[in-house]
Length: 221
Image 1 (tube, rainbow, N blue to C red):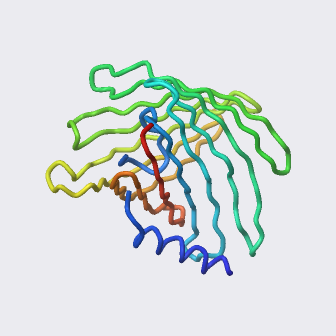
Image 2: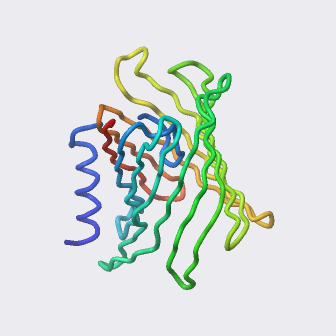
């Protein structure tokens, strides 16, 4: 089966499958209350290849979970390439004023490529609830410290339409930022998120020329 056909089938599954919490594409959100699984894909608009992540999270305690990526991969010219995996224990310090959560995380990864590297770093995840259940800003800050010190972040305003339309749909505009203190890079993504329990569908457009999205499934313990 060709790459273009695989990518098209995946997109059709997203739009016509059973649609199943709403937010941006890349930002980590609140602590999981059960088990969540998701598949995310990045597909160039010419459908010549694709890359993706197979991940999930497990709620260990009300304020502690384990988030992980089982596999980061890509398919190019019909060939499958495995790139890495990571594990992230996360602890929520709790709600504070307009901050819905205050999550501290430790990121541990293993990546294969031209050089094989173990990675280590720290992250902070929060959400500013500016208009309750209508408008919020998701913020992630990550500081990888090994093998190279970086500063990365996600800032994503999210508007939810459910409270005044009854439709469980949110729209977002996400900025993914990265710097090594010598250079600066960014990606901009606009998209929608649909949540119909227990499924979540997220589809967006990365202005670098990719269709992005994920399909998630979760259940509470």
